[in-house]
Image (cartoon, rainbow, N blue to C red; front, top):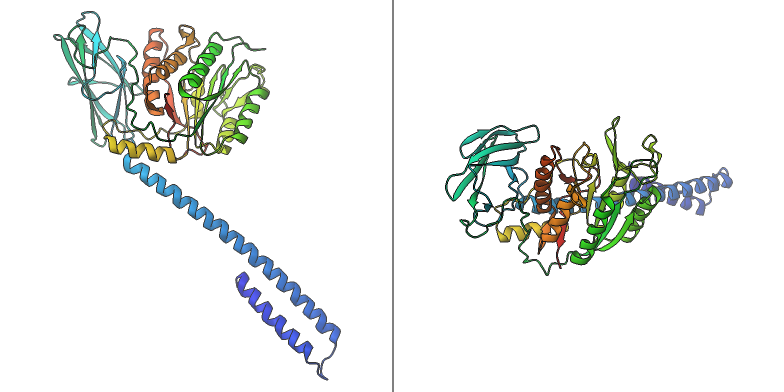
Length: 451
């Protein structure tokens, strides 16, 4: 019997008892007993009313949760209608680096050579069956990276990369290798950074307010110092505030208390209309027992984890923030421990209308993403002049953007340049971009809008 039925039954018993008391009869054995029974029934009535109210509260909570889930389902359905979620192979060219444009991209070679190495990466959820470069089959390493040597024929040499996954899905990417002086529209010099000139028909879209917490740790109390994090952080602070309108907070050589206090202050201040970028450059460490990554503040001890900041703790803070979109940029060793699965990718061939729908869907859905300088391995401190190789690529990508730049496009540009430059030092460094594990990511994306 549910709470409402029990309440009705008790009310009927109470009414009957009250009626019997109001009609005294010679057979009433003891009025005191009847009053005690009445008091007991009144107590039962109060208890039943309390249970009914509790049940109503639970029902209200369940209805609110149902409404929330229905809204999330609607958002995800809209997103899935316009986003290609790794349904076919994805081809990325690492060297020579360039950004996909309308028409056939052209890479201009400054010198006349007989051959040119092409380095790229192919990913597919179903696994890769084959990769062909100009009809020559290529093998992939365990990261999906291939290297192919293309013979230069004449002033312009077409290059066609074709990937087929284990389900038979096919994807291709075509570009031209041109000798300097022979290229047409869209040419660029070999090994130069291609400007990220994004189309910007969404200038009037309200993206909300932007905040950034930027941390650069050079000088450690008990750990060897680093060379570039402070320079990296200062430059990132300048470009985010000057070019993108971020309200920034810069922490140099910050200890554990300062970092966590700054994050908690942002947690209390940010609203659903705000975007947050957290940039960390400094030492990182991996707990090899549970494979958890950590940021090391300047008061950290290499042999004592007491002052380490676990990426799990950072994740918990991100999960509790109201901010709609959050991007963590981590330039430290073992930073890849923060990620989980890959992100949904924007289809390179998507038309203007579909892309507009995609952008609007991404803006509505919550995002918690991380761009890391590498995976579960050490990364380079230098290699980019006054900056780390990762920071140098990140800064140049932001500098060259002139419109609306989504996180995926930023990652593609940064990754291509980091892999190519690190290879010159015989170092394997592959940046990653993915949702932060267990931080409340839905299906959204982080956007940069240049002023």
